[in-house]
Figure 1 (spheres, rainbow, N blue to C red):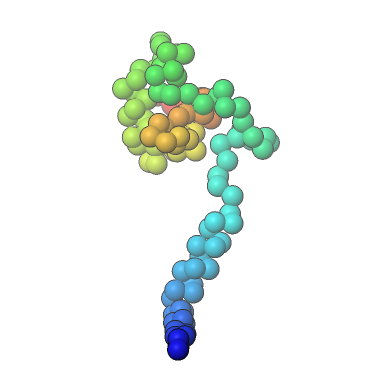
Figure 2 (cartoon, one colour; figure 1 turned 90 degrees about the vertical axis):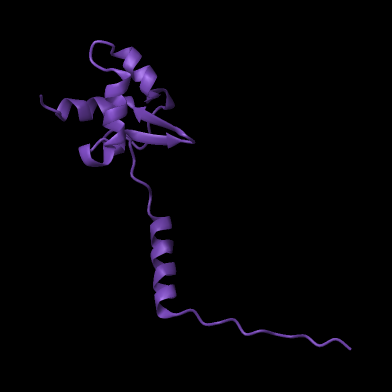
Length: 105
């Protein structure tokens, strides 16, 4: 004769419920868009690697300069132009150009 054992599920604490609620809210919010102002999307052709962007503007940009800017992207405001694709960090060229235009020497 088999007996079924029903185990009572523990009631989550108030802190756990608040944490779950916060997670649900953050998942429902749309991630920040890198699309240009007034547009809902952007072209994948506008995403470039560091090497590609440096090759497009050899008089202005070098690979080490771009890497330095990307390493400090959270401090210098460049983060919205960055898209992480796997291990690669891609730059949205129009957003990078707009960011660069705001920099003064």
